[in-house]
Amino acid sequence: MIKGNLHTHTIFSDGKNTPEQMINRAIELNFDYIGFSEHSDDIIEDDDCVMKESEYEKYFNLLDSLKEKYKKSIKIYKGLELDSFCYTPKVKLDYSIGSIHYLQKDGIFYPLDLDSETLLDIVGIYGGTKAFLQSYFEDMINFAKTTPYNILGHFDLFTKFNERAPLFDINDKKYIDMATNVLEEIIRLNKIIEINTGAISRGYRTSFYPSLSLFNALDDLNAPMIISSDSHSMSTLNSYFEETESILQNYKNIRLISIEDII
Image 1: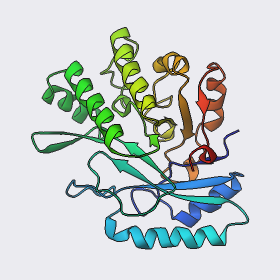
Image 2: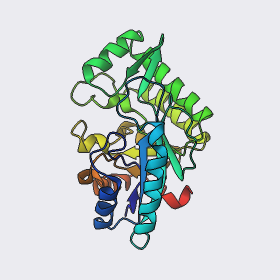
Image 3: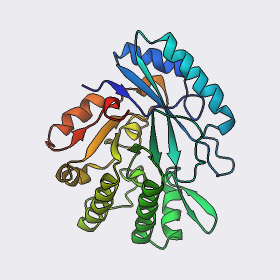
Image 4: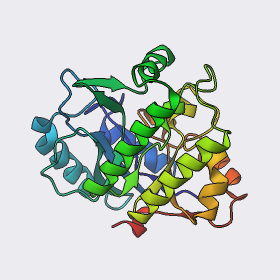
């Protein structure tokens, strides 16, 4: 049984609820712990989804006070969701999530999860699907090599719109082989692979990231994985957890990780 969630956003970045509201919901769900992972400040101008560095002290002081207030009910952990273009955070974290939301080309930042039309345009800018995927995965590996985060967030975020507007053939053997090679390298770099249910609760997908087509490979790799809801509101804190655990029973070698294995 899943005991908590480490991928949690609040009003300090792009979430809908306060940290205390999320904590109280986690207690209602009988979670043993909750971790907060606001989007870290980055170099992208006018990025409204991130928590500005000037807010860090206020935010982490608040978490410290809430940790004390609720210490008899739940464990609270301090994290950030780092992007490949974020500033290096000058704060002590319990854990961190590394995610790629943008690709940069010729000084322009392109968002990967805005909408299907924008994503199609980005693929065209990169000269087609193969070149786009190569650039995305190269960035992912470089990010993993240069940034000491713990958890790789939503591995194949670019498939967010694929069920409604198919753009990538996630069952193609060439794609699976390419993705598997990347996953193998990420695991070699001691990163935990996130099973992210966030797009389900927001109505974009009917399954989690990474796509199910990659799970035989993940099983073969004895992948360390952690389930999270990438929650932006109280109502989605445990979204699709039971269903995910049921699906994972089909894969005997995947290693489910908890916060106790990280800190």
